[in-house]
Length: 114
Length: 115
Image 1 (cartoon, rainbow over the protein chains, first blue to last red):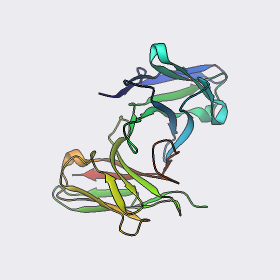
Image 2: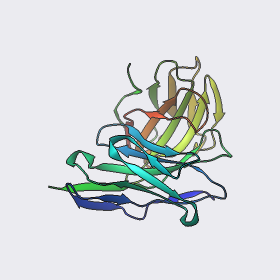
Image 3: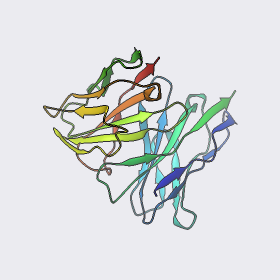
Image 4: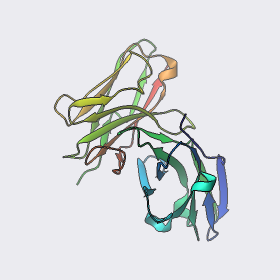
């Protein structure tokens, strides 16, 4: 069955430090891949998505992610985090076999150390 | 323009009570999705509408859950005879057109607590 794994439940980084959030997926074909961010009291917001082509994807707010087929990974990165980046981050996969269904990981909570 | 709105934002129900959760999608958006997000988990797909047609309801956990979108805009998720395990945040999302290729715009959610 298709699944998304985010192995880190909670990560704390210092403001200005680099960030990498891990995401692994299980799917028989190349999936559509997404990263969403959820801030307290706000709806989920799409950071970036990958469908095909260049495996390094640029998103909003200075985030990027790299699709690595050999590792079934789609890790999210940011070179220098800001206090406003503190939030919950969700990796998700959309399926070719479904016109509608997106499967979300369980999320990684990011805290920023001043 | 306005984003996706949901009401109520918070709902407390006694076990066995029926509840109705409303979603107002972005005007003109064809697709509408409902998700259930349990505490500490990612959202889980419940159901999908394209206009007024419910094309996928495979995620609805039981026949106590029912969703409708009669005029292809506002949608209501109804839960009958609520149980404690129904406690969660219910998210609604809309998209300009069909399919998972398109960005889904999420509402703030309705937090349902069943006592």
